[in-house]
Length: 501
Image (tube, rainbow, N blue to C red; front, side, top):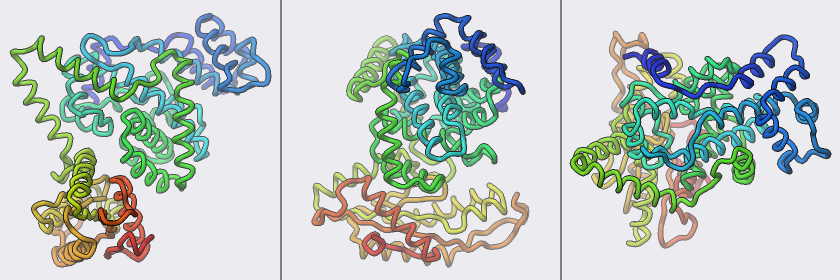
């Protein structure tokens, strides 16, 4: 069943939270050609509880006003219409989703709100820094990005909870798993609801593309990138995933917006500080120690297995299949990002204990974007599959090939010195040059013949006898830096981190 039909079925057949009348009226009035601040303020004041929340928030130390606001209209004058509108919509959204902790089927509302609020705050910070999108619009798009999860949970119940549990906290892979299991994603549903609520196009596009901003066309791609980057940072902070925070987040912030390392760190720190205050405004649980979240999840699963003892074997097999699917890249068949995170941490620890080296080869396909743009995604996909095949063929049995993301691959080489790893890299480059990709005449890209590929490779080596590299995330970052050195040299080559540093 096509995705749009699934979305329509879910939205039509199940009770979803609806935007309160006051919030809907505010949206309509702020979209009008002539905006009447007094009329907007009067409309908000009709809902006394909502107006009280807005005034309590704007008068808090978070906004730091020189004098308190006594009316909603004064708040709009002091803070601006967009800030007050965002507060109205945010309080309305939070109030429509009734949930704290875990409900009887195990959906973790606390974790949902932690991630949503961290995303909203990070999106606001990134929008302020980047300067192309109103920070208040970015905040609400971040708060609403995962709204579709509520719809999927209401439609599929415990089956959806089991799918989330199979990911073991890896929110980055959720859309792919949802599409495999339910033929629709929470991003699709959230964007459809945003359209029904008549949110601005940039917010709709950001919600739809918050896990795949590159699929969003101009002029809203930057908005989607802001929310995707904010969501990535939020998931890292909620799950305590330092590898992602120190590599992918910083790399994409630099590539997409030119945000340097110190600015990336400033956004992270501002998000951490502000999220707790924002959570208190909405009266949702702002943070929970990872140990407690894990203990609650394990207790919930254990209780479910007791109650459903006769289904335990089937459930275990299903979870195993889902986990394997999550860790494998659906296009190339090699390990995906979540599998890489597990492998690099495990191998780093093993090499440190045994005193052996661990080399990491970061491989970026040269000219991939022009190829993809000119010939289409089918040819681009063929390029990625070809790259993965060459890497697997040239890898040793103990090596690990992973698709890091986009056109980037990683080869983990346990027990391999820098000199030996460089020879492996040169061997791969030679194989790429001598094994062109054959494109069939009837390909969607409209081309035929052989395409010779090349790669920019960055090499970093962890040697327990040295002290320069002391963590898995630093190993990734060093190899990433070396790869960019290889790209600056014109590609089709390998650069080592020691030479690039």
